[in-house]
Image (cartoon, rainbow, N blue to C red; front, side, top):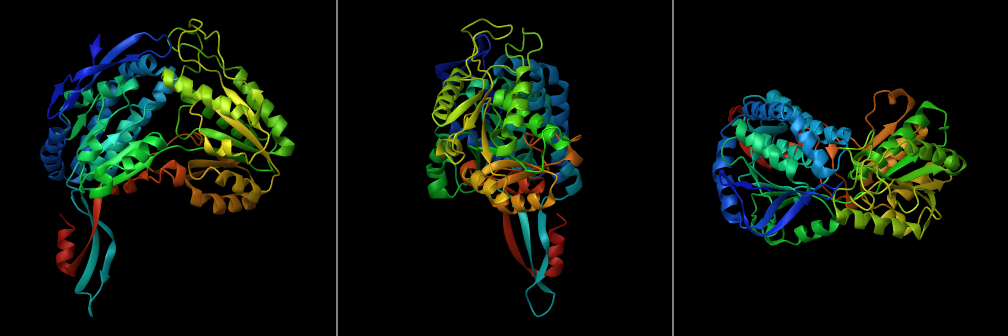
Length: 519
């Protein structure tokens, strides 16, 4: 059986000790194994900072951008192989696998272009110079320069390619070396991706490292020049916030955690309108895409009470046509299994909790006895589930994220303030989507929801034909959110690069400041 090795200190290392097995979630067939210990994490940090950091800082933004462009090209050349691995190890349909792989390469290409635009510089100015003396001669300027440590990225199981690329693109362009720790259960794609990157020779030695297995002690080794970026559960995020590096050495921490993303339908939208059809399509897509295992997926669906039955029926009819099963062997399968048995157990528990405060609309408990192309009782399958809230303000609905193909319909009175107050019970989210053709409704909703979210998606008739939906993360836009969502801010074009840089105010002769910014 294939053993996934870690790429650290300029070479591949197999690790040692206890072994974890990666399986196909459709068949439970073993695919590979990973030794959970045996990697010298302290040496890995030192090597990355010394060799990778020095090499990256010597390159201009344009040169780093060219490096990212080569990684995007390499990734595209290995696209089919990566898609097959995502199907086997992640239970992805081909469409879902492409969503992950193509999203990753697109993000690398986006930051490659940004590097080209920034040009032959190594330092970035933040705004214009400010006169601080009697004359303009004595001025000040804020600048951004790369931190001198290492960017440690702890990524989630659901997007092994995109998660790696979106964090690494920003850090590498900023001039910081990266240590990537993918989720063990779905690490095949990330492992092969790093293999392709290493084989290409596009990266300087130490610029990108990969740890397969456990890295629990790594956050405690970090110091003030390092950055720790995490995507995953709020429970793990709390542990990271309490780590020695963060508490005692002020390690810069960015967290993307739980998010009960909401979709709000305006009272002006009818089921047979273009905006109404967009709403249904987006909700169904987010329930089923990646088997609902997206941090941006719609979990709470707010519909005016007088339209709730009609839209719930439309959502159910769309889900009826969804073939669920083994993406490799089932014909026309459009939704695969959950990624792991633990995910299956968690989703079942989440559905049971919702059942205490909701009524069935579609899918019951989510039990799927006969997956298409699969065997009964084998694999981590669940059917889509849509529940109807008895009380739209119930704490269970707004507290517990069920990370699977599950959504709750919450009828409301059609008032924008009512909808805003209900959405805010989620205590902070990555994205909320609003569907209307009434500008007054949008104005109120945006004003009320913006402080609670990292991104707002405004669905209307005019954009229906070109919208990818609220669940698609774009590298030019902020990805993150306040409160329950973790308080993080990734991507967003240049903003994502600044996460890995130090902002410094410099004061002096204006001509000297100008010369420094040409470097």
